[in-house]
Image (cartoon, rainbow, N blue to C red; front, side, top):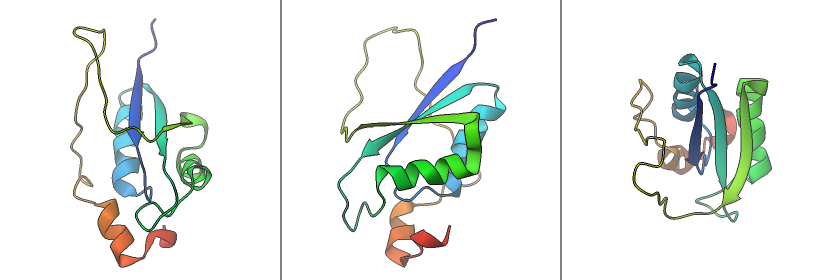
Length: 110
């Protein structure tokens, strides 16, 4: 049987319940998940290092997910009928905004 896999790309600044629910949704579908974290320069908008974000995700999911860095991309480009789909997942935490979390300065209280 062919294993289904999904890729989730993001900044995860900071990782929060919405990110976790998105990942959990895909895991619950029986798929393997690869989380690609954009390597951003540290700033007020991007306070966590790649390693910190990776560790938060690994602490939550353990070995259920793979986490890898990618450059700080600004665009995702694909060809026609490339063998996979792009889909948006809406869940009960979709309203959570990492920007709002950063504004409240509560990011280290996860």
